[in-house]
Length: 113
Length: 130
Image (cartoon, rainbow over all chains, first blue to last red; front, side):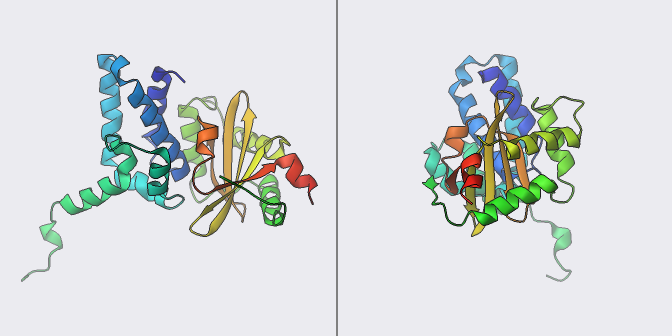
């Protein structure tokens, strides 16, 4: 696939957090391939990539939930020798961070606490 | 990726046979998988679930399909990879014959060398071992 096809594939993939985690792992490999071509992206393509990345980050917990049902993300990350800059391989870490920084829902705290 | 010995293939063949008889999906998952295949251009926009299952069954009938066992959390799955219309489709299902996924894998060699995949052999070889 050329980088335009990779981008189109990634844009489609990020819309389906609810399919098998095995497919999400293929998506993460696609995102890494796109990273190799980022310098060649036009402004419009870069914006499309940003939008797709945003969707992935926002739904990181859903993608990670699907992955953890069928695969060990950390093992795949090690096997791919992923650099720290490739944040998309760290959906487990992002999920954890999002949990910790989630604003407190004061309505859920019992009265008098 | 480990290569398996000939023994212990009966559950794999039983699972393949179960899917050949009936493609069973996890609850409400078939339609979403189909939608994704269409959006990715792996199936025509007019494709129905029957068209999708036809591709799955063609992989399961292909004697040159590569058969893998995939392990995760001590649960075994069957994974089969075969070329359909110049694309490598990966079909995965549990030993009970329930579909995990069926999709075009873009980098099959790299993908199928990942942790958990254990190469069994070609379908034709595996079926003739018994």
